[in-house]
Figure 1 (cartoon, rainbow, N blue to C red):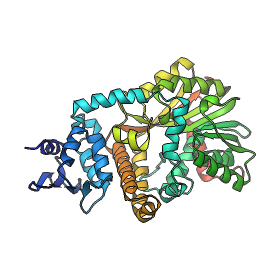
Figure 2: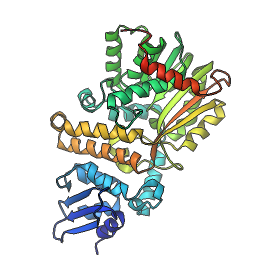
Figure 3: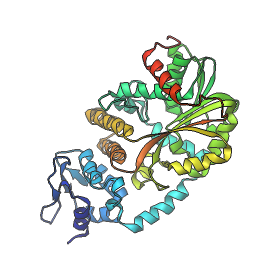
Figure 4: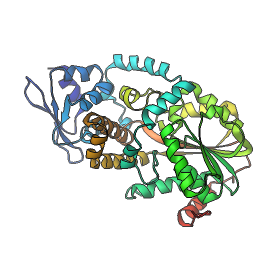
Length: 415
């Protein structure tokens, strides 16, 4: 029996995977199950099977994007969901990572790659965020929120969930009019503009992406608030001054563990004595790990999703008060599934913008990420910190009350 047969027989128990390959009989793995997809997979050449067995994490994505592994009559999501749903994180079997050799090699390489110094940070950010502005407009919500939304119900639209995310975060920040806010990793400016519009705060947004900076500044100018909401191309380590509040959404994943203490020391330095910070980041359940090879090579070079223990350990020496922690388990799965659906719907535009190979790369990334939150070890963490033990109310009811106000009330500043 070929190694790929052994691999797939262990990996697929529920649902079915029918494998078509050159010079071999068709074989089906698993058993039909209404809760699991049935997938037909075609290998275009005889080298596909060996590549998958040697390094499933990298090779499966590369083979799919290069057209050598084809999901017949289906999409990348069907295959990835079948495999990950058969091996959920909480089950503890880890069938898809059974090749110890490539896991050890990957661990060494990623630990070396985590040293995310300033020059490399610019390069890593540009790799992903300086893609065509048109691409992101095809699958993100109207406000260009490229981070986990907050679904008050799984039936919410993406626009509703992203609006709820901004209100959820703003409520935790307990911002009052006239405060100065620093937005570390401001994206296309949506959060900074929201905070000013709904709280009256003055906001400085910082990014390392030239493309995001252009869009954010243009949005502030168009809203007539460029004097109150400023955007700069600067590394967080170079920021000076003091701020009443700091918010960072979807940026900490690019910091790298060796720089975690630097990040928290700098945040403490920038906060006023009564300052409050909200950190929103993708994280991993369980202990520290490594970034999968495909994501590290093609999507987020230098990226790493931290374990909660790594975040807390890095922040402890700063003597910031960890005042609140929330774990978002399925919210990013819902977000990514909607991004995936919109990407598939925009296939023709994306292929015209780039090519078929890029489209397959992007859908594999989104499918893998969605299933990592549904079945794997990924989640989202929101951690609230304060420099003072008395700056915030002693019970968290104020968050719920302020969130309801933000969701239902008109903006403080109309534009």
